[in-house]
Length: 378
Image 1 (spheres, rainbow, N blue to C red):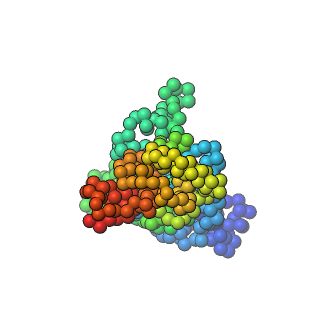
Image 2 (tube, rainbow, N blue to C red):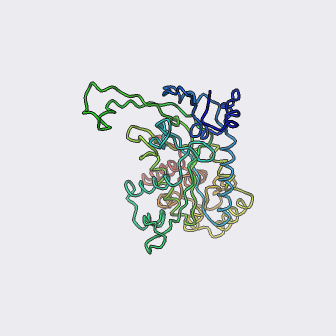
Image 3 (cartoon, rainbow, N blue to C red):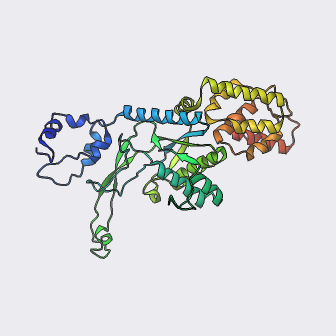
């Protein structure tokens, strides 16, 4: 078999089983497609590609470690960090319409070859949700995402205050062969009128399988803007969908909290020094001991400090601070749902329902349980 390559490269590629040793999926699908002089379109070529042993978790793990190091460095510079995972609810496809020898593409990391969501697209999805669904104020959007005018010399050009990183899989995801079957290809191409006698033209393409986990990371010096950005991004992934074919159910995500995510957060922002810092703030709070200071303490809690809350107790803070009346103030705080859940759980160690409570207090207790992720029976 001859290849359109230099002879020395042909010798390497044509070694027995050499193609099955390609460790970068992006190189396999984007840089080498099996070819011969009697070329004809292969209907099962996507299956052939997937059957090759091309996954390399070490490349992805190396990339994840560098991202963790990046976030840790920004943390030291005073930035607030948010990390969370989402799971594909159905198949996910991005780059379907990109130019490719197989007629359909798939967005892969340009260096490491794993499927990912580019940061620019993630930022655009969060912005779209903020505009279309959340009806966020113009000033909030401008501060978060920056101006739409990207002319560097323009007076209206403004940089956003929240940084979005690429959405990356927690491990190399499963990829499946999917199919679309347009019945009126000749009509869409302008060659013939639409009619029942036109033949369908099956087209195969690659898509990320359902139930694959992706990690999303953001950072900013503005904590309130960061919390809103996380909410907008989650909303966009859940309600709007990412990538192509969202109108037929592709690209939607669902939220998941896993042990792996907690480990990622610990690696990024948790350390002995941070534990000491949390304890110092908590000890100072106990000396001041008033509701306003308590709410301020909650707002100061970072995502990476959530596991460290297990080292503290609210029991000796007094009922003047930890009481059922403060639940309404908790609802108004602009903090992440994970922080709120952890704090509510600690409060439930202190607050217990009482038979003399009125209906309003019982209702607040139910709200506190919901914040902590505990479902109360009616």
